[in-house]
Length: 210
Image (cartoon, one colour):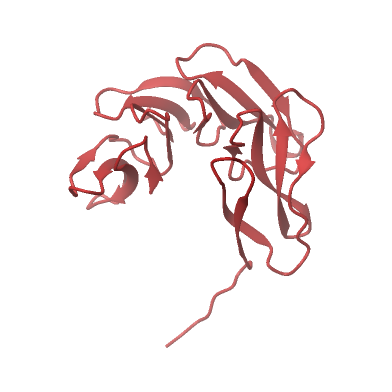
């Protein structure tokens, strides 16, 4: 679930009989559900702070690339903002911008960059090159909107959280984990930006049971 706006609305992913994940609006007080997207694979959403607009990545029947869409919290036809080898978008704290990862090139020549774009569309307002080993995982904003946060493998299978200032410069490493708990599946900032919660997990930590 993704909280959407200041009220009781969250966006959830549901896969019904056709096994196609779509985004739904859920009012957690009344239990009212409304389907917002009708594509073939829509699993992650980000809302503007006022809760009026939902941004997500989805597919089109015309090609094989992910597309970034914007749709109203009340439903209706979505508008496309970008397409290519892109990650799901995240909305800035002030609701003016979205950010997403884009991969360009193929094989060993592929490179990732962060793209920052206005929520109303148009050309990117900023593009930031990333280390060649970054693979587009868990992008977010810092609470002040001045930097992007992301998860990155530092050495071997150990993931750490980094911050990339929008003004440019080198990424800043925020966590310094080196134990066997390699993954960071999730993280979240406090509203004032003074505290950070991080979930950690092991790779391949599962059992076979009878």
